Length: 255
Picture 1 (cartoon, helix red, strand yellow):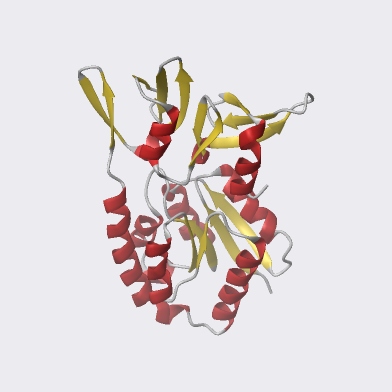
Picture 2: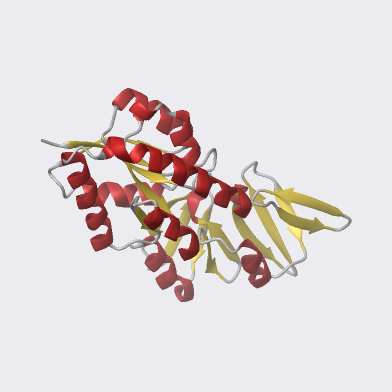
């Protein structure tokens, strides 16, 4: 008997890692992968998974909003995947729901999976729906507070940008170029170090002295014949990963 499982995460590498870990388990049937909230809602209704790995912070909608769109009878057993700080994570313990804190270790992943399978076997999911609704309400407020726009000053103009829309940032002399989800370029007189401090989100990583990327838009890590490492973004843009930042990138991505 296998458990029908759906993976929901807007980061390609995160989905690949969860899929790889699940592939070692003969008791798991992966019924699909979703890149955003809308895909997730459709897949849950069509595929009817028993278990989902649900990313909380996605570009189009949060994991909480995905669950709110579903009827109670449609909600599978949920393991949340989150980059929340430790304070917010305490809420998961209070409401007795499991979570994986990015970047998570393999043993932590399998512990969460085994707990979920036991819950399914004991048919305890229905009793958790009320607690799930409470958790969603609490943490939805938490994420709403955290998602204030970033003010980018360009001469006499100030642009308000959603942090999640920033794809990557490049240094250009005394300036930096901030590229957003709408493929717009914002030219600022700012240092890379100060910009990284302003972002203060775990998905933003410096991979070179002149490059910061949002790992949610990262598509591939490539090893060249010359021994170099290249990060390829979802829009096709590539960046060289310098040796001084390579180990940290691999550690964060669990590669």
